[in-house]
Length: 103
Image (cartoon, rainbow, N blue to C red; front, side, top):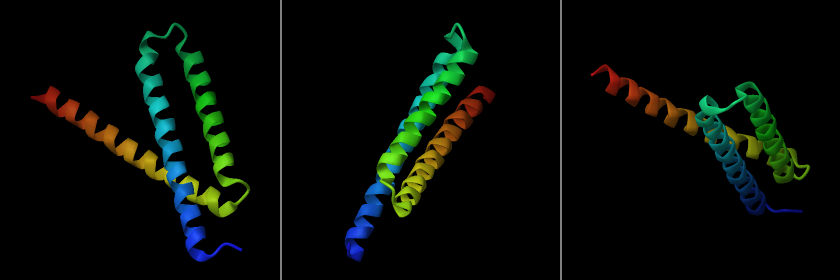
């Protein structure tokens, strides 16, 4: 049996790994959107990119969880935190561009 401190450390590690998966997911999404205008087949690029990201994410979460629902939940929380931070950062960048264009 794992004591409480060890279990907390395992859950924090799962959360950090989930956050890393989230950061990777959002990075790959950002790169795909930057390359989309020059793509010869943008619909195919979106479809294949989404399939690749989802496959990578579900495989990573499966490995992180290792069959433990608590670790899966911690990894999902980490993923959502990373996603929230990425969306917030992108929103600030977009707002700054619009503010600069308005002047």
